[in-house]
Image 1: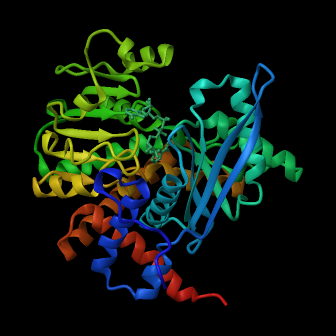
Image 2 (image 1 turned 180 degrees about the vertical axis):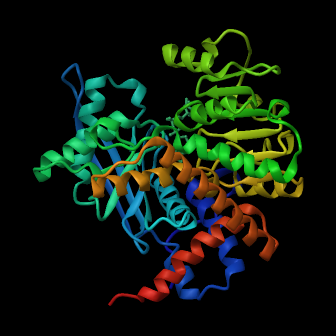
Length: 426
Ligand code: NAD
């Protein structure tokens, strides 16, 4: 087999897909996989691109581009979020789909990996425009999705309301209600208790696991910096604050705020909800997003987007532990620098799996039309996160590799084993 993509670019120009492939090659290097299987799993199974019209409020028709990539369907239906961002491109969606395959396998969830995206800044659309864009994109996706083939969820720039419009568009098309077509929906149409906060909460469960290995400090002595104050970052900050940790800085796309004595996260949340900008919270120093990453702290939680921790700042990061709320926030070059410096990195596919774990619970509840209470969801989430951390740590010790390589090895190996068992069709 020959490689389909040219992935040899300059390090500074590396795309998310270059990063995903570099991580994959590194993990496969330790696994002793059959060469053909290793090559097979590099390829996304299907890639879908659509250009579609949206009527703006002023009557103009504007064209938008959307994607959906199914990386793997070996372990079950593919699963992955939908991102609305001006930076979305096919390479990014491919990378995110591949990471979903390893993440689901690592979490022992019977799903393959997928991802979708639309090239749009949702903040520039009115409510009506956002609904029309979502419904048209969902209608275009219908050949690609179903509760048994591919199940979307929220990601950057999308939310439960957007999932509700996708669920409704799909249901209207097939003629009956299909709650299991998406996860991360509002509760009143078949969403799960605990889904909204699941990723952020899981990040903090992973952080606690990591801290027990490297620090004896009490929560109130442990300083946390969070980049990104959306679904993942805000819920991570809120749960850490509720557990008594000192969250000293947070940021969103506009910039960040820092207070060495700790931020009142519920108050920051209220200010950001009103203004859409964390900097409108008073009692703190304003910092830029670059500066935020190198502030004095014990734990850094990147929860925004890819490539934030790179060779330009890795040397200056103070944190002893990095817990990746975002997907792909650390470049391979930064990984090398941080590993060399002894910084413990809890990788994305392990740390932020809480979202897909509770999405899986939501899908199971929808298919059975039988719903669990919040305690049950959160208990099962915590149990899964702790189990996955321990399995990854064991793999890292066995092969003497970092946690990222170990997590990827576990995920890739489970998919590869299933592929060998199923065999190659026809
Ligand atoms: P979101 O849209 O809810 O929030 C994103 C936050 O990051 C916002 O506060 C935004 O202002 C900020 N941001 C965006 N670009 C930034 C930049 N360049 N610098 C600083 N801040 C920036 O998105 P989300 O759902 O919280 O997703 C964040 C990350 O977590 C993504 O990498 C996503 O793939 C990953 N993730 C999300 C989930 C989930 O359940 N939502 C699950 C797993 C992983």
